Image 1 (cartoon, rainbow, N blue to C red):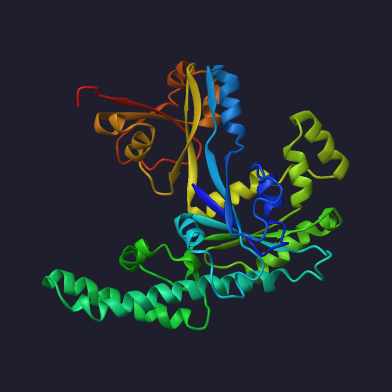
Image 2: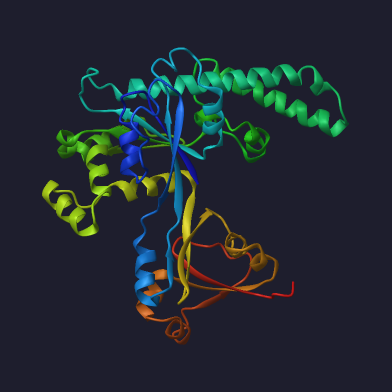
Length: 361
């Protein structure tokens, strides 16, 4: 999963990137220039750690997320253009973390939703340009080819004309409902304004007492299709991320915070994308794997290795908590909690799976 962290200059975007476990660029790296800094972050998941406590494996591997800290130079959106190289990076991202400044600062009073709307407009304008150019081609070369190709082009043209009208006033495509066939028609465009996004309202330490109420209010008024909202004290979270577990616990207690928000931000992003985790567990390795909602046991096998999918016989499945309660796989089998499932079994969040397969296939 690749998530682009976007926001206007001064929004606190890079601080959020650091809080999530990324390493900020060297001083001056992005000053006045468009750029993207990459960070690969392990997904906090106590289930993996508790399985590791049971099996004492040689390796414990968490799922990971790639974050892009995308820096736009001042005036980039107001100029109506984004650097072409950055546009490509943004289009390839699976989702956005859209950071908006919700703290008072030297740059003036906070107006986070104005910042959100400014980026929404920029992304919608870029998508509108893409749709317009594609329609121009369809209205000329799209009239040629086989009957099947002409039919496909005609259906695409009708859909893009509707999307063009929707985008004309700067409305993001994530608010436009598409059925499964329409989704397939436009998937290759990787529209910016269609991507799911988690809006991060960046606050400072002074805003912590009202954080929960502010988040609830923002969700009630601004959440919608493909959009969720979280309030994050980026600088505090960045300091917590740099501490040991024991020191972080003391720091959180001093601030009166139950837990760091880093894992929650990642979890909300997973929910937006319809992702979840299953696990493999044993003496060699305990590992978290990522699947899309609706995935089957065969998909899980393929995620681990293509050979397992090709030679799939069955999957042995148990919930992670049931496995911990049993204390071992042998005890789980004895109690009848270890189930045999076929290819079509819909994998659930937290399943521990072992794939049995035929190596000769």
